[in-house]
Amino acid sequence: MAKKEFKAESKRLLDMMINSIYTHKEIFLREIISNASDAMDKLSYQSLTDDQVGLNRDDFKIQITVNQLARTITVSDNGIGMTEDELEKNLGTIAQSGSFQFKKDMAAAETPDGDVDIIGQFGVGFYSAFMVADQITVLTRAYGSDTGYMWVSNGADGYEITPISKPTVGTDVIMHIKPDTEEEKYDEYLEQYRIQELVKKYSDYIHYPIEMMMNKSRQKPRPEDAGDDYKTEWEDYQELETLNSMTPIWQRSKDDVTQEEYDSFYQDKFNDYAKPLTTLRVTTEGNISYTALLFIPGNAPYDFYTREFEKGLQLYSSGVLIMDKCADLLPEHFRFVKGIVDTPDVSLNISREMLQHTRSLKVIARNLEKKIKAELMKMQKDNREDYEKFWKAFGAQIKFGVYADYGKNKTLLQDLVLFNSSENEKGTTLREYVERMKEEQPFIYYAVGDEASQLGKLPQAERILDAGYEILYLTEDVDEFTVQALQEYDGKKLKSINDEDALPETEEEKKAAEEKAESAKDVMSFLKTTLGDKIKEARISKILKSHAVCMTSDGPITIEMEKSLKSHGQDMMGFQAERVLELNGDAPVFAALKNAITENPEKAAKYAELLYAQALLIAGLPLEDPAGYTDLVCELMV
Image (cartoon, rainbow, N blue to C red):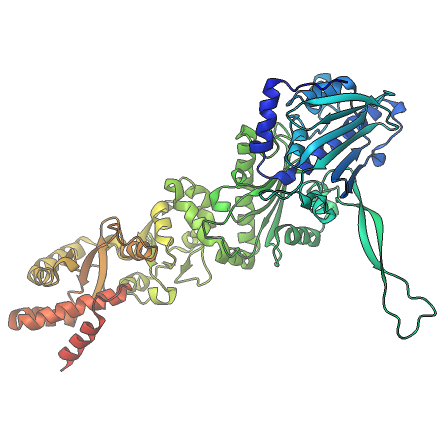
């Protein structure tokens, strides 16, 4: 029979597919195996109403044969096969899919089996084999036909179809593998270990056995008359082996799967030495059907908080791996979750590895987000020890999520957040804090610093703790940004212990504070003049009780924010807090300073520098001149 040309648009698509569409050449085997599975699904469906088929589901199988000498890989199935017309239609016109048409027919029939699961709906996967093969031969015989056909093509030059004698129904796809070049290596696909690896990676859950004759080696039996000088001998042999497990763990009945099996699956699949903290299995049927098997790890990967870390769930379509890390299925704040999603409803565009951003994918992602949140809340309530372990590994990610995207997820995430506090060193939720609040307590209080053990000793904390109120201790860089995003919880405003109005004042207290500030105006003016641009202003403090001095800030950037930004290399971008030096007007030090201003202004200036340096130290800020500070202390002592 004369060679037929592909249509012009098919030629262009074929060239695109070989060179552009698929990002990994290795997926060719997945595509050919999936087509074989489809062919057996069709014949299996027909056997339900046709006694002449003579096969039941247990008889179907896919066989892979590798011939290194001939440089061929053959994938054979005993499925429904193709007629000459179907060969012409399915393989002569790229993007024509018999599987897709079959599924349309089933849907139109409105039979109970109309939802039969067919993987290959877009008819182009077959041509992915041209990425590794310079010639493909298809031998096929359709069910119900006595004549077989051979389809041969070397790619864009076209194809030939020839009648042949084929004793069995089904299809053999024979791929002649290209020779190695300096740029591309193809020999690896002729190695049995590589074939085995690709089947395990992409087609492990195809529900028919995928068999291949494997070359193996074994120890020969020791002869009975062997002497002491006998040396162990080995022999090569071949054994037919099933390469795939067929039934994924997430498709088995929940009652048939133990937690140990889930743990083992997680550790093997995601290369984690530790068991997951919790396992979440979700099955949804309806307009959008999917099964998800999710795991929350107990430890963060070494690169988790780096740009190199790739989030995402493994995406399967009817048991065939489509994408190893589908980022669209996980929001950024839950990027630590690992697992799989298997759905027949995800739309594939041209190839199984190119996803359309469809409504179904978004619906699945939204549902999973809610399920993950619910599972974490359950862990927080029922297994606090595991939740604290989770929080230690991934708490910062949840906090990032609270303030990311202008805080749009804060309502979703706020109940997951843990903070250390003056009442709970292991961490408290905002809900737990509010439940412990005193009836008259006006705010949820927080203090920001480097160490929780030091925050309770801050001069600013004294009056809050003496009032019997609990303080949240924020010790991570992200914490203050998280609090700024939250603003309030359950109607209670979050309040820094640095804020003047952190404790309500009576009218008498307000009047006394105003009089005290007025009487100290000359001292404050002297401090500002002496310290210059080091501070925005000096003021009589409303937040100090027994301590003499502290450093606070005005404006949107707090001192702790400044420290955080500097630690990330952003100190040259104008992110600096406006420093305010606060003095306790009732402290003996203030009286000494006031007297020195009148009697010895030079000494008063040294007092000002000393108080400024002490305020920096208390705030955890670096001294501008440590040696100068120690000299000043020594000078004043003498």
